[in-house]
Image 1 (cartoon, rainbow, N blue to C red):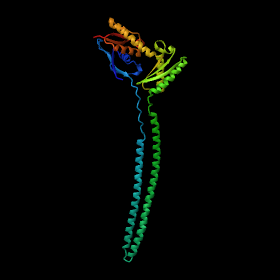
Image 2: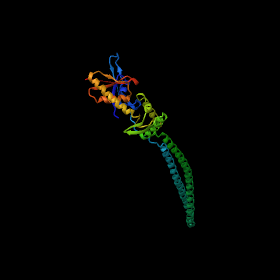
Image 3: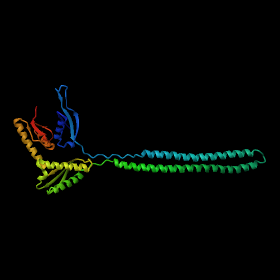
Image 4: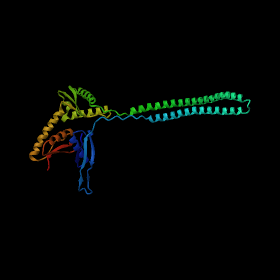
Length: 342
């Protein structure tokens, strides 16, 4: 819906003019104040209030993207596990290095003993060979000790990783739960609103002892639920007061059923009253317009609701040389037809 601009001596008057032009209820209109009415220091000059308004958009809200609160925790857990994994490899490497160094030192000692006598060189060689094997065994023992210590590190880090993993999983489960709670409710579509309203209106008419068939039509973004039958005057009321009340009750029911998230607009009509009213007002406005063109005197019509005033404004807007304004407030607000000033 495009924005419209209206002016008035006060913001309330400018807002009423916007309601007249849009023909909607106040809670269905979105308003932005452009200029607030003000007076000069001595009250000699006054600035009119100006605002712009439009029918409140009713498109469905987008869903809020769920955040993975434990994503950072998972990375931290992986970092700790990764460090422990490096610790395990370092432990194994340290074990091998210690075993290798032990073997080399034992070999040097055996070589020193072999140099003491020439007779014992062969024995030294054999001893060096034997001791080499023995030292090799000790080196292997050092390597096994290093591997055992590394295995202990592996087991400890493994237990820590499992504990971290279970904690991370718990955080993820809690994160998913809170994400579902944060998810916004989707806007209720017009088809669902039609079903709810039809059941309500049908049940209400049954309680009133009236026989009628209730059906709904959807045009663009507007839902109209209409009841057709005989002798439905009780559900219409004087000047349509009852049918307007039924419309407000239906809107309240839909808003509560949708947690305030309902798209489009809703209107209830009984026995074609609203269409007949629209036709009558358009004909009446044309008749009054002809009288204003004949004598040039403005005509003030009877007080009307915002929807009825919009019908009059739209009808007179099609006639050259005439303009309309709204005067009064609340239930006494009425349309005044006058000749356009040059």
